[in-house]
Every structure is written in C-alpha cells, then in structure tokens.
Image 1 (cartoon, rainbow, N blue to C red):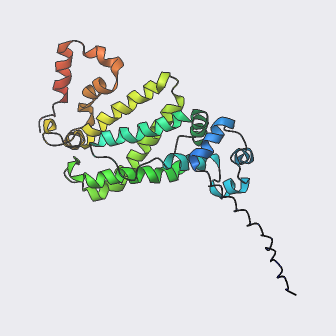
Image 2: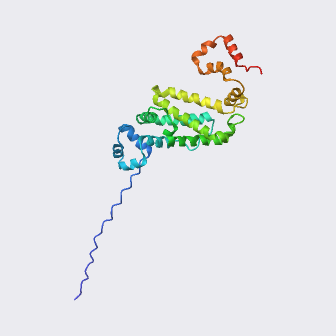
Image 3: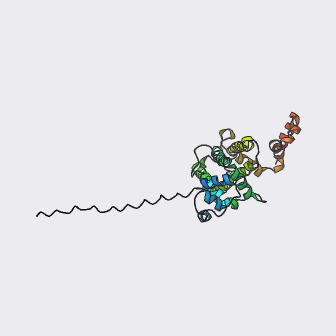
Length: 266
C-alpha cells in the first residue's frame, strides 16, 4: 500500500517591521524666524516649537533668546567673501541684502532691532555674533584690495586693518537701526542713505585719478596736519550744513570763504 507524502504547509510569513519614520530635520534659523513672524515676536519658544513639530528644549539649546536667533538668521545670509568691485559697492551689496531680509520678515525684524537698541545706543557687544560675520566679509574685501586703499602716508594697512573692518561693520549695523525707524514706502529714505554711504566710502578710502591718485581721507589728513581746523570750517559748513548754504549764495562771500581757507603765511 502506497504511503502518501504529506504536503508541506508553508510557514506563515512574519511581516517585516515598518521602516522607522525619517527624522524631521531641525528647522534652520529662517524657519524659526518665519514662525515667530507669523505668531508674533512676543510668542513663547514653546508655541513656536509646537508649530514646527519639535520639542521646545531643542530651541532653548540652539537659541538663548530671540536676539541670538535674529543674529543667527541674518548671519546665515552674509557671504564669506565680498564680491569683486569697489568698496562702496561691496558695502551697499551687503547692507541692502540685510535690509531686504529684515523687510521680508518685518514683524520679527522691527521688534528684534528695537530690542537690541533698548534705551542705549547700539553697541557692537549687542551684535557680537553678527558683527563677526560682517567683519569677516569686509576683511575679505580689504585684504584682497588693500593696494587700492588711499591711506595717509604714515599709515600702514596692517596697523588699521582691524579698525577698518570694525568701522565698516558698525556702519552696516547703523543702517539696521535706520531701517527700523524708517516708515517711508519701501524704506526709501534708508536706501538713499545706503547709496550715499556707498559713494562716500569710495571717495574717503579709495585712491582716485581725479584726486591725484590719492583718497579724500589722505587730502583731509594732509590739511589737518598742516593747518588749524578753523581754516576748514567755511567749506565744511557748505558740505555738512545745508541750512547755512544761503550765506554763501553770493560769489563774493564764497570767494572770501575760500581765501580764509588758505593757510597763513609761515
């Protein structure tokens, strides 16, 4: 009698474990600022974290305050190197980029700048991290173009390199303050001031053929070293005090002012 072989029963398949959900990437500073901009500058970090689907502690660790968040946000857009071109062009390129970014998130940007100001003038210590980003940007331009700088004869670039970087950084920060207070359409008043500073920086610091291959700073330095400041006052009144220009509307008075500018005989 033939023995039938038993058919094998296939083993039950164990379902493969479901793949773990991909980790949610931590939001960058722009995403966090965008959430604050939508919810309100005074909203809590916990509420912002909930809107971003992350734990509040993660924000606490990354950003100690809204002020530090704003610095990280603006600092992330500062190029490591300035574009080719004149100093004034590099200055306006960066400042207008910062202002466009602030304007894009204005409901965060304005109270952020106001919080930095408080009741005292804006100090570099209050923008230490952003200052470092901006300082590096300007130093990259200065180092690359130091031969085009028109420094006074006895001044070496290496001796004023840090000072120039600091001054340009603080000038940039001053336009953030101007933007915060500017209620003109498209903050046009601040943009005009940036444009004016662009040309002033090139005149002050860059050697020009029409300045005798020197800079305005070099000529001012030479004059102030050789004559008393009172001889410059008539011309400075014209340049710096438009309300007084009527005094020089008569050519005779202008000629007298120029004569007073001539150094006294030795």
